[in-house]
Image (cartoon, rainbow, N blue to C red; front, side, top):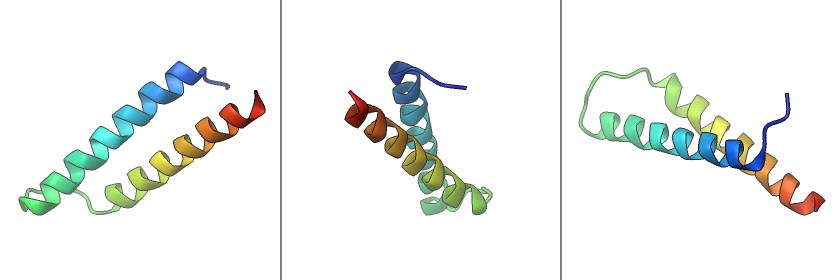
Length: 58
């Protein structure tokens, strides 16, 4: 499955917002699943890498 650049950017923004929310929950001591922070950071990195390689292909 190949996503367009716009879809990747949208997905990246959602992941970054999710990461912010998780960090906010951690700081305010709200219940959350700690492993989600690591998984979300990996997702953000993966999406940034894909976007970067797409920009270099042109």
